[in-house]
Image (tube, rainbow, N blue to C red; front, top):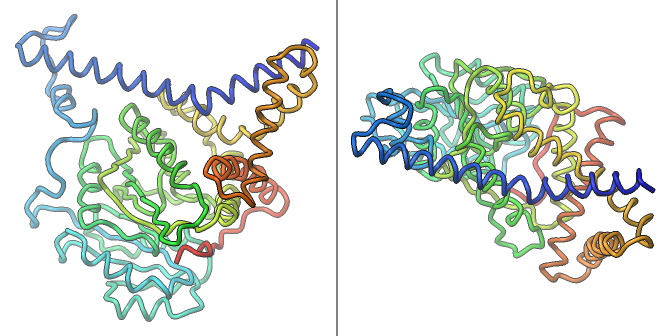
Amino acid sequence: MGALKIAFWTSAGLLAYTQAGYPLLLAAWDRARRTRGARVAGERSTGAPPAGTSSAPPVAAAMVATTDGGRAAAPAGGAPPAERPYVTLVIAAHREAAVIAGKVRNALALDWPEDRLQVIVACDGSPDETPRLAREAGADVVLELPWGGKVRAQDAAVRAADPRSSIIAFSDANSAWRADALAHLVERLEEPGVGYACGQVRFVDASGGTNQEGLYWRYEMWLRERESRLCSVTAGNGAIYAVRRADYVEVDPVMGHDLSFPFNFVRRGRRAVYEPAALATEKMVPSIEGEWARKRRMMSHAWPIVLRGGMLSPRGYPPAYAVMIASHRALRYGAPLLHAVALGTSGALAGTAPVYATAFAAQAGLFGGALLGRRLRARPLLVARYYVLTNAAIVAGLWDHLRHGTPAGWAPPEGTR
């Protein structure tokens, strides 16, 4: 009985920390940092040095004069056109005939000097008219590659990029960037120590579908913004991001950049940041069931990074980042196991105390609500269904990876083009 109680309280406590405790920790941590920054700024404005110091170094002073604890307040793209860096924007594409022309036009319309922006479409074994349509739309370079996966297509595009390009940006074919998005990403990369910057994606659901991804995504972006301010993000976004070319690293073809790049950059002494002003929009998978399938595929690519890619090893991490990886990645991916343990132990202990009976009933209610959400489109039931299926996708992705490995090839999710 004692072992069951220990297992229950451990699993329940870790679940509570993962979903609510970690956000509260980030909020308190961020508030303390801001309070300290405001105090230091006030001491500087009055001419008084910070306690325990005789004078403030120039770098520290520059860090205080920011809008979010790390991003300079100067407007994006403020440098004269002739002084802006050369940028190559890479669009990896497989079967993107429906959207590639619009994406190329969107890229060419970015607020960046035309003679300093190169657009490369890396066609990863596209069996349709994607290459022809990309050329007709005005792409500077169109690579027709054998089907080897998105990462290898991106690697080939980086090697083919204009030698003058010091920054390489990446986008999905179905993502539309706001005109100033590239300028905001470049601005972040010009900060000392930053090697990777990802933007914000807003999902559009014009069909009025049942997917609750928007709710989850707002929660995720809230976490990501604070991780970025405090240290570095633990995951990026494949739809809109950029890196310094000198920092680009080729990873295993089954390990996507959005999960493998941030921690690898941190290990190399660089920061990986989130810039919410770099905005893109993307069509949402219309249903929860479609989102389940998409996340299952995503997790089959995430598990190789977790199991053999080195993400969970703390070697090379600053202490703060190690806490973030453990909280936001290790415990998040372990949540299905924690739920199973909490459900089983609370059920076994339900007759011994009201707290266990209540815990068992709450979990049964969650799963029951998820089942009802298939037929009843009430918002609370849909949220329960989304949560349960998202956690189930973590397990299904692990099963897929262990059973037959993770293929490098990829295909656009249904309903997002």
